[in-house]
Amino acid sequence: MIKYVAAIALWFVAIAPFGASGQSEVSVERAANMGQIWFDRMARSLRDLNFEATLVQSQGQRIQPLVWLHGNYDHQTDLELLIYLNGADNRALRVGDQTYYYSQIGGSYTLQSDVTVGLIPPAFYEPFANIAQHYQVIASGGMRVTGRPAQYLRLISRDDYRYHYDLWVDRDSGMLLKLQMMTPQGEVLEQLQLTSIMFSDEIPEQLTEVSAIQRPPKLYDTQQLSELRFALRPNWLPGGFDLRRAHHRQLYDTQLPTDYFLFSDGLTEVSIYVTEQQAQKLPSLAYQGPESLVNTFVEGYAVTVVGKLPADTLQRIAENMVITTESAQQ
Image 1 (spheres, rainbow, N blue to C red):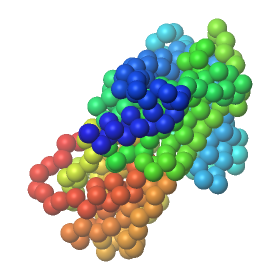
Image 2: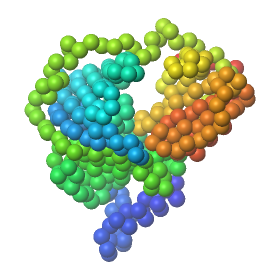
Image 3: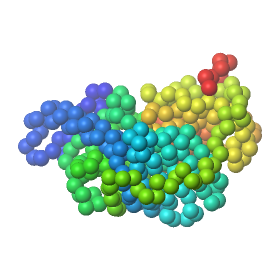
Image 4: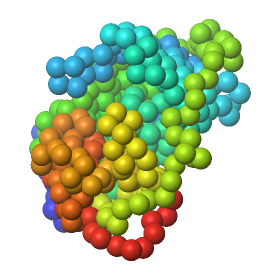
């Protein structure tokens, strides 16, 4: 913790105006308080504002332009539509806590989620207090983004097990204009930036016709899921990660019988897949990127861990899997 606080102070002093180092401790505390205020304003804006935006999402060499529409239907239910502009005509429509994914090539399905998965972290829609135990947010300075004055926020993990985020929030509306996801070493892995945005008092016209759109089937039918079958269980994850789902199923593409675990700390998710080692037949591997992946072997099982976390973190999760006879909670 001492190392963490010192790092925050040094970072703030480095970007502060010359001569301000004598006030660094007070400045850091004020920056943290302002960071939380701005983060909470951003979360409310993502739920409440009516807007139509264009944006670019990039991961390495992969660049995807999108159209993003959002509306607050009745001050309780928000609507969201994403239209992917490159490649196949893929779209995501969210109505409250039901999200519908439409694809020309991969099939369409429904997930129960009150955020559109794959756009921005779920925690950005909620008060900062929900993740404050494991993240710190600091407000400092700003710049113009998409032609609008923006407040700069630095979202920093309190440990080395997670990625960090840079955020730029519209000073007028509180809307998120740009984000960067980075490794603890500062390498940018993923970036999202709005290229245009229009606000209105009414929900966008395209969202007024969603009731007529056919709803695809649920991706996971609870009646088709079964209890965990293998004895291997997760025994370590970074603090704050809670179990959200655990069941046995056959993987969609390989049909391998697999135990599946989903954990989340509110900001990011980790998926763990457990199969019999002889059945999987993949080599040990580790890849770090926007979506890191580790595949290794433990007690005769193949363990694959996937998530937006450093590869070293995923490796530690995999290596700490243990044999147990206790039943996991579903």
